[in-house]
Image 1 (tube, helix red, strand yellow):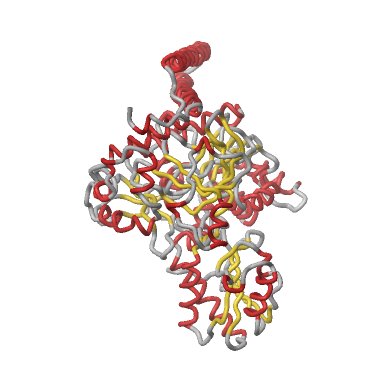
Image 2 (cartoon, rainbow, N blue to C red):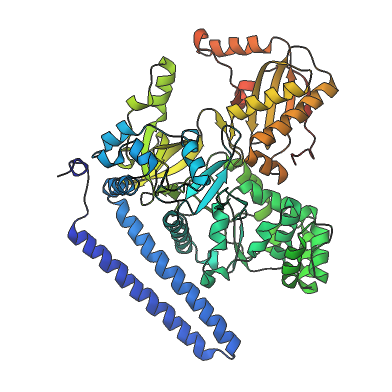
Length: 629
């Protein structure tokens, strides 16, 4: 017996349990197929034209594809959740066997690993910067470095050093961790609310391909890749053509989404990862309501918006004149107390919004209700470019089941790391690492994962909370980024990036910071830099510093730049502090219990209380239209 099998806590699914599970899946598949076919034949006999019969076949194919695949995936997932430790260790063994002959696998002796404890001994915690040299070799076209073969795609996101991260994706992972997980999420939504898919789905994503690595491998957005690769039987349910996501000008993209969206009264599902995007879309709809209604009445897309000519030409046939619809929406707009056109006016059948609800999303969700009304929310789960970490199976709650089929997870209590920091004696290899079935409801944990695409014991610096269990598998909720990282709307700003931006601003101006603290303010929708300067700055000096800091931060972080370009984040505000602010801040921290010898400044935080007592002598904001080319 191998050491993998010697753990008495491993609950193995027996032959009878496996047989009953397979029987259940096959029986339900038969019942689903019969039900859909029967409904189809009844409608087919009553169809009056070839076109109507053709549409019925499309609907039948969609329902069969969606229901058969979704039901089987959901039942398999729930079955495995009963035996999480068994399937987690099985997955880890598969990863080690598959990647044993890679450069990373040989360096860390994957072939010799016979137990979980040995894996932890031989493979230290990793972050992107530790893996960057291996990934760079893949980007140049080398195979078998971090993973077997070569990635088929890279998901891009911002990195802590200012250079983008290129997260490797394999074809197997693309199918399992992305497409299958999305199908599972979608089927659970259909089970939650039958009306969610009654009409069209308006989904907002980034382009699948934003560029190519030196070896020609594409990189971009995983969600965009998923939309681009949709099966034809499902694609007809999506309102927006893929070309919309490729419009480079953000205002033009928002306008086009609204132009196509307002024409469709049967939208039942709206989806965007971040609720701030949906709030902004609604605000733009009210701002441009006259132009939109004019386009709807007369046809076309307003020429003042800079669509690429080939995209405009492709979309114009989808934007015919509909004066009756325009008149109806104008009447609703005039009846609104604020004379504003809102999504609940043009999408009366909207049943569900799909977006993040965890972390600081609550602020944006409250703001969103005034536009969309009180509709159900389906959380998209614990998502990052590196991982789809959870799948929520219920409406109106953010917690989701851990994706134990695709990722091997380890956890460390946040309270343990806080004790380490307090005593200064903690080392990662000495921590108590826990598996999924060892977690406790209500506790906060740092999460680490290993997957089949070359990420091993990967540290996202994310904190999650356990909200409950489905058998032996936890329901988790994202709480916040860990130390040194903030996040308002997906930008993930790192301390190092703020430090680099302050340094750049000092080099471009005559101002020098004695002390500074950057606050991520979700209520204000942007970042605020509190700075004590060696000399009190004049208004023009402070404006120059703010603009230089804004420009440098955009250069450091591509996600921040994207959020600024798309107006999801406001321009940086810089507050000049009174002389002596550093000393006063230190005194307050020591009075709060921090040892004087352990006092550190806080370059980046989301805790507004840390800046609440600063004495501000002057303030300014970076210019709204200042973006990096």
